[in-house]
Image (tube, rainbow, N blue to C red; front, side):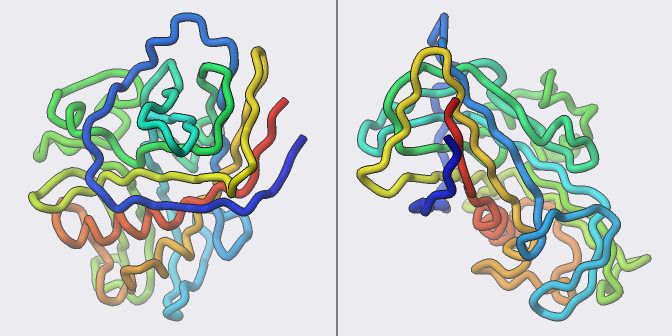
Length: 254
């Protein structure tokens, strides 16, 4: 069964407090699969390909990497969500298709809400060198700032005033009162629900739209902002656009 649904989308532009990170479920008997699809104007995005944003600015992307984690299914009412087990964070790198999808165990149940973080929680940001997806060798850790880059977008544009037309957005970290952590929530329109049974897998297709990234609530013109590589107000504004760029497009249970 595969459906394309109208979701009530909520990109909560809030600093997310550190939550319980690992499922306590010892023998989960269902699973959740996430499949990301970077796009531009509804079509699959390609690296090193010329695109034009809504401001008429030509650009190409050479690097697109982002952290997501703490996936949970909820019922839209309870404060307690059913967090997916296994690795708490995933690093997706558009140059490696194998990193654009992953599966985690989760408890069977009746749900209508998908939540996940875009970024890395505050506790891990200050916990120093870690392993797995959070290994600094992945090129997503600021050694000078002791924190993680949540989203890295690099490329070139003829309208950039930087050397060699560079565009570079390294979004992450904290600089009080500004944080770049965002929580994404997609909620089914009532009374629809997901009935996830024992042994079943629920899969979500999620687009990451580069046109929505540039044309979000914060007008991200390359001419004005070709580079952002430090935490602060600009980084937080761009983080809002990143959260707005994610969109659940379909799901299937089988």
